[in-house]
Image 1 (cartoon, rainbow, N blue to C red):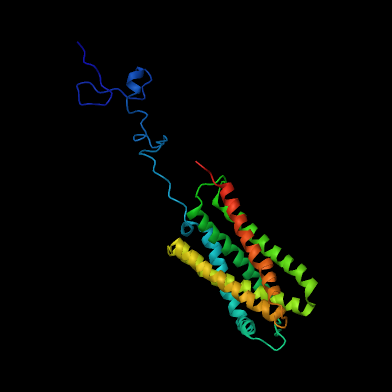
Image 2: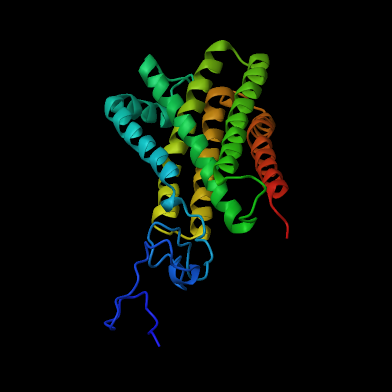
Length: 280
């Protein structure tokens, strides 16, 4: 009786058969491990293990936001180095009260563009700060495909808020005040908004990269907003109402053009965030 011939070349009396021999039966050419990816790296192996929960989104892991903030910071430093004298002069005029309430606030084209850049920076920072507030107190799941869309919506709303205030100030001031005071007020308001952006910049950095708590960020932002509104009220009094004996007018003016738009802006942001939130 002849011995069975093997296919793995064991040292028997007769040698094993070659796998390239087409005369071999199918069970010789196919085995249990013949298609296993561990023995054939050219075959797709798939993934092993149990899928875990995705990491929550954080700003300090976002390369796009980090790049934008870095570019803003570098641009602000370079611009400040070139316009340092202008900024110091403007700050001095901001707290100086001349006899007629109007100081000398002349600026070049580069200095004006730097202030407009700071206004844009203020808009970006406010949108990021409200995004932090939304993630913490409203929700982190939205119908949008990306968190960039939500931040972009907040940014567009912030820019629209500043444009609305500029239009409202222009329409009201042209009715009650002369052109010289209006031009001085526009420059003053532009400077105050620029200061607001520079002061808010550390809050975004501390929250995004140094894990500052949301409560401390909110307190910081509230203090900054109170300071900005007090400074705005003070300059409004100096420019427009210093010689006016009716104190009620400045209160109505300030509330109608500063406080009401701010509260409406906050309400609009809150409404949009809640409308886009996914409710489980």
